[in-house]
Amino acid sequence: MDAPIARTALGDLQGAWRDGVATFRGVPYAEPPLGELRFAAAQPIRAWTGLRDATEHGPIAPQLPSRLRPAMGDFRRAQSEDCLTLTISTPAPDSKPRPVLVLLHAGAWMTGAGSLDWYDGTNLAREGNIVFVGVNYRLGALGWLHRSGIAEGDAGLSDMIAALSWVRDHIAAFGGDPDRVTVMGQSAGATSIGRMLMLPEARALFHRGIMQSGGYGRGAYTSVMAGERAGQFLRLLDIDPEAGNAAARLQAVEVPRLLEAQVELARRNARFAYPGTMFMPVFPGAMTLDEMLGAIAEGADGKPLLIGATADEVHAFFAADPALLDPPHDAVVRRFGGEAKLERYRARRPGGSVMDLLADLATDETFLRPAMRLAEAVARRGGAAYAYVFDWSAPGSRFHACHCVDLPFVFGTFDAWAGAPMLAGGDATQMAELSAAMRRAWIAFVHGDEPWPQHDVQQKRVMRFGPRVGMMGWLE
Image 1 (tube, one colour):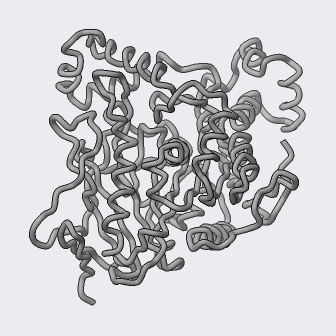
Image 2 (tube, rainbow, N blue to C red):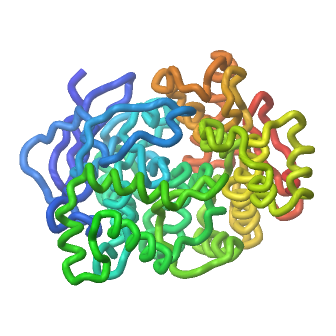
C-alpha cells in the first residue's frame, strides 16, 4: 500500500500506515517558539515546499520526570523548545468528513505530550471512524509563566488555541470535519478546556468537550496570583522582576536552569496534603468555585460536555509521598478542619490509613465533587452533561482508582502502559472489556450520540465504570 499523503494549504505531508490507520507525526501547527518567540503567544506556521516527511515524532516540550511516575511509570523522548507539533491518526486522508477528536494531554502543565504512545489514537480512529489529533504544547515556565511586561502572552493556552485553529483550517485534508470537533482533556487538559470555554475566540473552535479529572477545586488562578508566583520564580533565577532588563535576562536563561528553578518553586510552595501545581491557565479574576463552574457552564452554551473523575484521584499523588505515611495528628486534624470531619472520612473507609483519608478528602475537594457540580451547573442551564465516575482499581496496586488510571482504558493502549504500578495485577480480560465499553461511549459522544443518559438536577445520574458498569445516582 502506498504511503498516505495529506495535501494541506500549507504543503503536503507523507505519513505511514499503522494497524490500518494513516498516522502523521511531528506535524507543525505553529512557528517554533524560539528566540523572540520564547514566552510569546503562538504564531501561525508558515507554508513549506515539497513533500514533508511526517513519519516520526518530533521532540516534546522540555520537562523533568512526572511526580506521578511511581503510579504511572515513566517515558523517555527527545526534548526541545521546538515542540509545537501534532500527531494525527485517521482512517484515511480523503474527503470523507469524519468527526474529529483533539487531545490536550495531562501533566499539571509541567509534563507529558500528546505524542506519547500512552495517547495513541489508533484504536479510536479505527473503531470510531474518527480523526484523532494529539497536541504537544509548551510546559512549565516556558508555557505558563505569567507576569505583565515579562511574559504575558499566555503562551501555553495560545498553543492550544493555535492547534485548534490549525484543525479548523486544515483537518479536512486528513478526512476530518472541521464543523464536528470534540476537544478532550484530562487533568491539566480538562482544566484548560474549562478556561477556553470562557473565551469566545477559543470556544468557537470546538463543538463538544470531554473533561476528565479536571482539577477545578484548585480554584481560579488570577493574574495577581500568577504575577506573584512569576516574581518568586524570577528571583530563584537571580532576576529582579522589577528591573527593566528582567524580560531580556529571562530570555537568556538556558532550559536546564529553568527546570531546576521549577523544582525549587514547587518545593517552596508545597502545602501539607494538597495536590498543588505551580502553573495553570490564568482566569479573568477572583472567583469562588461555584462562580468558576458557572462561568464554564455558561461558556459551554449548548456544547455537550462529558465530565467525570476517578474515585480515588489523589492516591496517585499521596501514596508515594513519605511525608504522608505517618503525619502528625494535629496536622491531619487541621487539614480536615476538625476531628468531626476526620471521623466522617474514617467511617467512609474502614481500616483506611491516614494517608487514605487525606487522599479521599483531597479527591473530593479538588476533582470529584467539582466535576459533579460542573455537570449540575451545565444541566441547570439546560445544557447536555454526561457525568461519570471511574472506580476500577488493580488488585496489586496501592494507588486504588487513582488519577490517570482511566487513560489506558479510554485509549486501549495497555501495551504502552506495561509495567505501570497502578495497573499491577489487573485481569487482562476484565480490563479489555472495560476498555471496550469506555471506547464505545467516548466514540458515541464524539459522533454526537448519547453515550448514556444525561445528568439532570433532580436525579443526578452518573455512569459508573468499574467492576460493574451502569448508571447510579450521585449523592454528595
